[in-house]
Image (cartoon, rainbow, N blue to C red; front, side):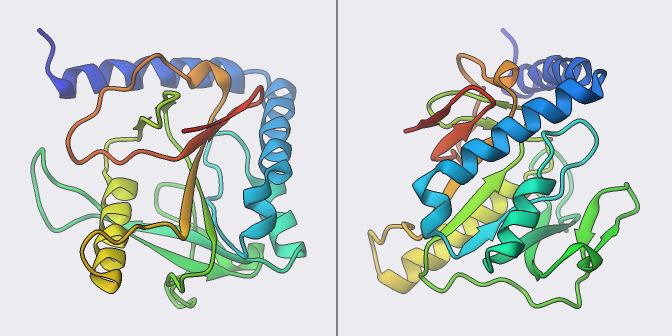
Length: 215
């Protein structure tokens, strides 16, 4: 029987091929990406969230530039992730990630891997208890909130830390209710079941060019 790591690796390989096929047609990729972004903006969660945690799309990910520009135009607090490797090594290693408040494209620069990231000199985003909407990338999702990332554990680790902070603030049994997580992907990236481990974090919903599904 395949191990969890092997199942994840196989699904990542499959989904990379799926996205590459969509990206091979730039007009189709742009069309589908815009449909996803418009669906997000039509959700009540977008309107009520003054804080938007987004990402600048990389390579064949669904484009997010329209969402970023609209969030800035609407005066929302926009924060983007900056990643750096974790201090641990081996299969259990998980990278560190912080979100920095960005006010426009000039606040972003390309990392060594070519990923648009905010400068570490920008203000660090901190949860204030006000509604916040996180739009998360991923290689595969399922309709129960399962998410398969790229293998670095950045989003899982960040969400785990935020949950711990919220519980410490509210006491035992406190809910992490001020942050709503929504995965962005093409419909071809939605699978019946994402292989998940004990420390893999779920998202509250997924948005594709065809639908939004909340759990």
